[in-house]
Image (cartoon, rainbow, N blue to C red; front, side, top):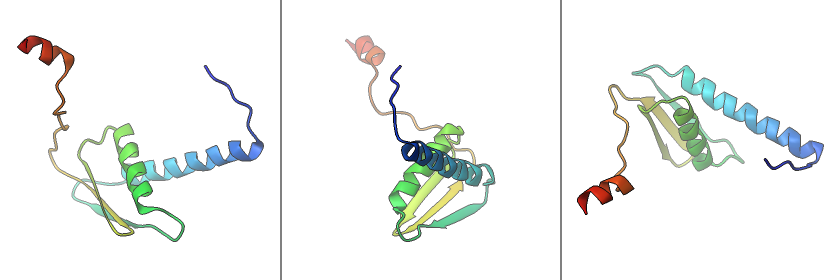
Length: 100
């Protein structure tokens, strides 16, 4: 375990990030199937960062059916019906060993 000593300001910044994550989680929890949301990035915010945070929050909630699309400073998100988890195209070590 690594422990660092930081300033109080740095610790408070971590808390603000946590509040932002909670906001993303709340948006996703309230999203029903068949419903879509559009989030517009305000000045000083980076739309791609918001998109990435929404994707991470969706994965944390286990929302495999979440679709997040960005165009310019707008991010659209919705839940698809009956979506299956994406399967990796990468070969696993086990599958490589079975073929040899």
